Image 1 (cartoon, helix red, strand yellow):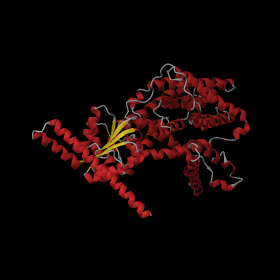
Image 2 (cartoon, helix red, strand yellow; image 1 turned 90 degrees about the vertical axis):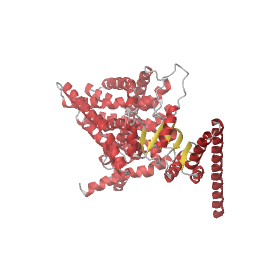
Image 3 (cartoon, one colour; image 1 turned 45 degrees about the horizontal axis):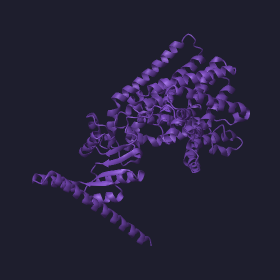
Length: 593
């Protein structure tokens, strides 16, 4: 690679980083969606925008992307990481419950929409082969944009989120036969169609089987080994190895990298390390997805508006309207109500990133004329850019008049919506978890001892590996939805840090914490715990209760007096914490004046 090529790559990457670090935050202050910011920046700063004027204005070289290939590969990883994180939030069991939506609603959406678009293309004068490629390519939607919008709204587990995800997963599965079809039509392999399809399906099955076997037998020992090393860097490296490795294996079999990452994530979701991996990978996902949206924006060619603006606008409006109408009609057979169907249809109505692959491939094989391919890609890109606006408009629809009850499509059997978090799964943590389970209280247990977590998982305890002092881990285990947090570990500094991080993220959540002694309890009350349980005081109370009963005091009276004394201790510690905080506040004011 020459030095000039290297500088070109660095220059292109610098432009994208500038968009992520300067333009997107600036526009966000004015309420502009980050997705729209990336798409718009890609369209303006890409080779089809200002980049096309470099020969006239050489200085634009440093503020535009010259070579799309410099960043497109990085952007594709954003979709891979997004599907991986979605897979971590699911499990094979939960995915199995969605089979009716994936293969029923999703399969019908691809087939019916593809057939309708193919018929329209034939009616407009395209040959059957070209019309079929256009129809199937535009029938698919943007997995990255739709899921990112829903994730940003916190609605991945809603009815709209589940319907959208089911259809998008079916579309990802449809990618393989569409690619095979384009290859067959391009090579003219008439007699070998069935052989080609069988070969492609066999390769895909072998790849998925290899990923599942790796996940079933090697993931647990691999991450247990890495976790016991106690190195965050090594843990992240292992996670990246698994994600990209599974994606490349799927890609070599003709599947999308994102689908391979999704499958391995389903396997990881069953292990103790899913939450820690989710926290480690999430920052990568955000930046890489931004790069992906930027690369999509680069494919928007404003010159198409100048050539045939009426045709392009008609194609954009027609594509969205047709896909929306078909989805609403199909969703009614699956008992989704009108509002849910319309909102989901608005998200799935635009085109998707796969159109750039299949239509580009067909154009290279001379199956599509250049102007037709350009128009189809321009329509797909513009509709993708409109997705956030369509989502906003659909959410503002008024609810319809009450009809038959819609089935609850939201995800269940997860400690997701309302639950407790238990920090520490040692002897004290196990007792707390067993009592929560006995009383039917949902909980998520987390511990940083990798060896202990592996042993407890082997004994049937559902505990996750992770550092509860890391805000990203707290977010991954559901702090935003948690009803309360119970801290059972005994490290004073670690407890203090965890309490401070929790209270900073959730000022309203209940926190019950173990404390080393009275001084530590006062400190915890000062930083915001709801209740602190000092080991020394609790041990003395338990000892006193056993002694009183043993010495002949009635059990009821002994227990009542112990409860009263415990309340007195708690009140005294809370009062001392308030006084200490007030004195500190006065001291700070006196010092400043």
